[in-house]
Image 1 (cartoon, rainbow, N blue to C red):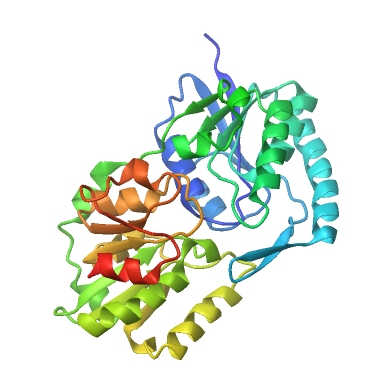
Image 2 (image 1 turned 120 degrees about the horizontal axis):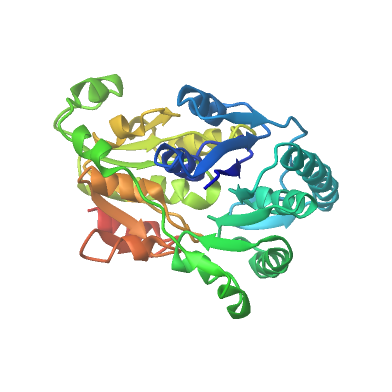
Amino acid sequence: MSKKRIVFLDDGKAFGGAEKNLLLFLDHLDRQLLEATIVTSYQGKFFDLAKRKQIPIHTIISADFVSTSFNKERFDFLNPFALIYNFFLLIVKGFKLGKFLKKQRIDIIQTNGMFEHIYGGLGAKLAGVYCIWFMQDIPRGSFRCIKRSIINLLASMLASKVVAVSEATRKAFYPWLRKNTACIRVGIDIGKYLGSQVKDITETKEKWGCADSEFIVGMAGRLIYWKGAKDFIRAAVIVSLKKHARFVIIGDADPGDKLYIEKLKSLARELNIEDKVIFTGFLEDVTAGVNILDIFAHCPFYPDPCPIAVMEAAALGKAIVATRVGGIPEIIEDGKEGLLANPSDSKDLAQKII
């Protein structure tokens, strides 16, 4: 049987759970059945890691998408100019990708993000290629009903098959579309994390100025406003009144949103907890950071489809507090694998941590 040629489409600008999932998947791909290539638009951390793993990766250079909305706290405001700009950019990128798929005689494309689903699906249609939407997003924000309608319409037009990473993600599709939607949860390489439990954590604690006697609570992942870092900082104030603790925020914002980090640091200063909150920035080896924690907190206030960070913390044997949204209750049963708190409720989050 001849090999099928498959492209995995990921913009590559950010490096988060979706990108980690893809690299892990490719580590275990049967190369006898599939000849795989990653296609990106941006050469950043994701591109470098793929190269290091000797995974074939091709870059189709193009302009960047711009955010279609901006948020003030938890309210989104649409940017009509960005919508028009992105619409034309999606068409341009779709045509470029379609030419590449045809030239390389690709059989299958798997898309790995919301914009990628759209122009990847368009490129697949133009090239006559089977298109799998690997759905790792749940419509969120002020316009989620409109977003959901648009996603369902586009999925019916562009996707040959939709694979959702959780039942919560699958339920974002209308009942008549779910028959073409499978739920396949992502996973982690547990052996990698079990080995990490015996590592000496003293060096990391010293690097971040944490005493051995201190109780350490932390969160990890790409820092996006809806993942609740502000709620975590507010909860830290309450916890610190009752426990001698330090609070660690592991991760970085997207390249175009560095201002968000400054807002978080400013909030910590305003609440007089600056000396107890540590911002680590991006860590290539997140395990080393999570390993020093006593409690891992994951507190998005919008649905998180299937957070790999929660699985990693569990594999490291950490006590877990997470919010009751999206696919999280499919991973954590309240009172069994961890404790679930109400979203946007820093008092409840603090109480669960305590």
